[in-house]
Image 1 (spheres, rainbow over the protein chains, first blue to last red):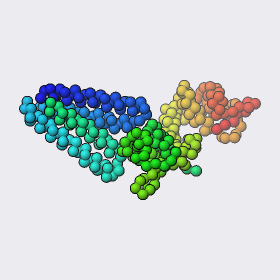
Image 2 (cartoon, rainbow over the protein chains, first blue to last red; image 1 turned 90 degrees about the vertical axis):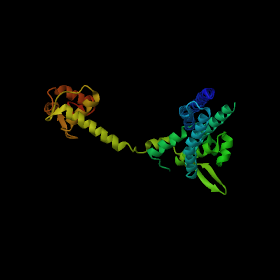
Image 3 (cartoon, rainbow over the protein chains, first blue to last red; image 1 turned 60 degrees about the horizontal axis):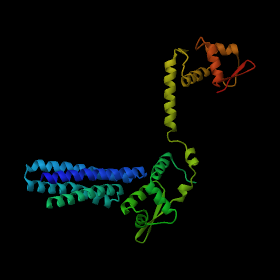
Image 4 (cartoon, rainbow over the protein chains, first blue to last red; image 1 turned 180 degrees about the horizontal axis):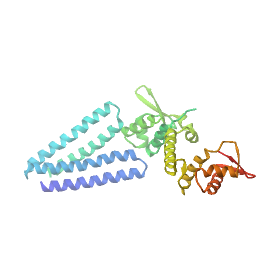
Amino acid sequence: MKTVIENMNKFLEQRKAEVLEEAARLIADERKDESNFLKAKANIYDVFKALLGASYKAACNDKNAFYADFKKRAKTVPAAWRKSLEEASRHGDTKKVLTEEAKLSAADEIIAKFDELIKM
Amino acid sequence: MIIMTETEAISLFKCLADKSRLQILKSLIQEEMYVERLAERLNLSPATISFHLKKLEAAGAVKSRKDQYYTMYSINEDIFKLPIIEILKEKSEELDKQAERDAQYRKKVIDSFFQYGKLKSIPSQRKKKRIVLEEIAKSFEAGKEYTEREVNLIIADYHDDFCTIRRDMISEGILERENMIYKKVL
């Protein structure tokens, strides 16, 4: 369980740095709006880092309880973003659509990485 | 000709200060296009293109029309034919506020340098001195000719150092002197 957490934290930090680097590149390329969507995405790695910590605390060293708790949180939290995305799409709010899509793309890749790590 | 307000001009310039949006406009100047075509051409997602097009449309830079299943976007040429100098010539929406701020500043300077109709001291700061001199100049009638003695008497009502003030009024272009005759310029 500790290895999974360590690897997850490493992954989250690395991905956040990569996304922020891409955001900086976009700013340098005079694409500030697109860069802002990536900054919103970068924040999600921190959100999931906090979720990981919360699940670890709640599980009291029980590996299966930790996995289940994190999976549950990883599904619940982005649910609000999916709802917001649907709402924004319905109203043609393109800014919100791109923000929520960026956040959800980070969430999807984090969940995929977690699934991959717990299978190992 | 199109008239652009200050707010509209700011919105347009802000909108144009983005490389992706400039690339979209460069594509649209060639021909009208729909979102997916622009996305393919510029290697951006359709959602990103839609976002930029919405901003461009709101700023008046592009127009759209429905064509069967597609929304076709084209450049709003009228906006881009407007010379920037014409935008600068438009009356500023800030003008009234600026005038109000100037009037407040003027009052503050007059209140602090004059007491009971007398000038307490000659300001050293040029901007303040100019305001003080203009205030004294109100005692001169426009178009009327004054001898130096008359000028001195009027200024002496405000301050004992009438020579300095008289010379300052000349150098600031508030009074003009010709053959020892003085006239108010303002």
